[in-house]
Image 1 (tube, rainbow, N blue to C red):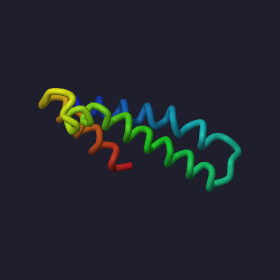
Image 2 (cartoon, helix red, strand yellow):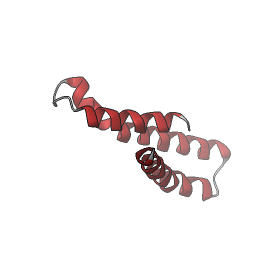
Image 3 (cartoon, helix red, strand yellow):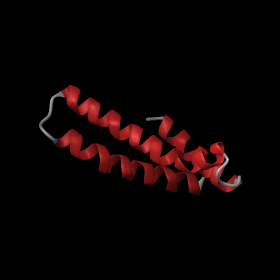
Image 4 (cartoon, rainbow, N blue to C red):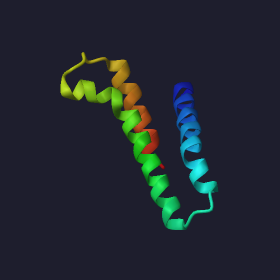
Length: 79
């Protein structure tokens, strides 16, 4: 439970850093939505990075890495 809270806190902090400036700027709602979606996709790509090596077979399977990556992606799926 404690690790989930740490992961969730880190995800929220990164999301605030990416989405905050886009939401605060004087842009149209469409531009804000586009930048928010792009930021979200960057978070997904950044969070799924460690699993790609496992999927491509370029790195050894590590259960801890797989679980950590899965937890991060699960947390992001709620946004």
